[in-house]
Amino acid sequence: MLSASHPLHATAGTGQARERTKAGGGAMEALLPGEVHDLSLEVQGKRLIDGVNLRITGGQITVVMGPNGAGKSLLLRLLHGLIAPTTGDISWAGRQLTEAVRSRQAMVFQRPVLLRRSVAANVDFVLKLRGIGSAERRDGILEHARLSESANQPARLLSGGEQQRLALARALAMEPGVLFLDEPTASLDPASTLLIEEMVRTAHGRGTKIIFVTHDIGQARRLADEVVFLHRGQVQEHTSAEEFFAAPNSDAARDYLAGRILL
Ligand SMILES: Nc1ncnc2c1ncn2[C@@H]1O[C@H](COP(=O)(O)OP(=O)(O)O)[C@@H](O)[C@H]1O
Ligand SMILES: [Mg+2]
Image (cartoon, rainbow, N blue to C red):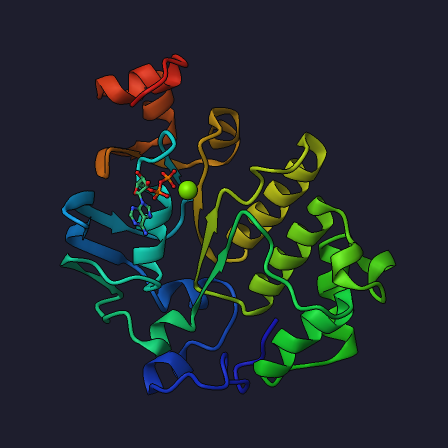
């Protein structure tokens, strides 16, 4: 856990950011709710994200589902400020997507992003950025990711599942208020997938807001407290997982859940 005297992020510029230096619930309060108004993204005349309105609150794991090409990855990138929308706006706790806000968010991609260094050095790098590097802290993080045995190996020699656990461990070492995950287990086997899900659940329990993209219905059932169902760049449903799986409102979601391919 962070002590209140540690800056959460070395470059957290505002007093507001500095106030919320405690881990857990405090981190969550710092960025929520996320509010999205009339968001659209047009590329070469194609409307890839089409009039999305969303309010993202804390307390639940939010799973974004939808078929391939629905716009899930684009929506996540917009929410994290990696790309700029054509219209509309996004705010986190009333603040625009400034660097200070973005630095309180983290993202994990389908393909793990790692440094060409040892497993331990990958974690040390992040901790040092935050000014809280210590062998003890790093070892705890590696243990949580079940990577203690591989600490001194080059990260690139890890299996796919291990690499993704390391990528997730690095993201969590930032103690982000919001963590975006874009199909992080899409190329992993079932056992590796479950380990990632366990880490995600633990992070959620510690107060990090989880926004998890998957096209895997089984995974969504395991993880989701609420579902945002996206189809053709539009939010078709935003509802509790219970309601979504029991009685989806839209034809698109019904077809998707029934395994009928959507185009
Ligand atoms: N940079 C881009 N330029 C043009 N079209 C894109 C670009 N990125 C994604 N698309 C298109 O936008 C749609 C949504 O993409 P994406 O968000 O990656 O879908 P998903 O993640 O749901 O599978 C797809 O039809 C894709 O081909
Ligand atoms: Mg995608």
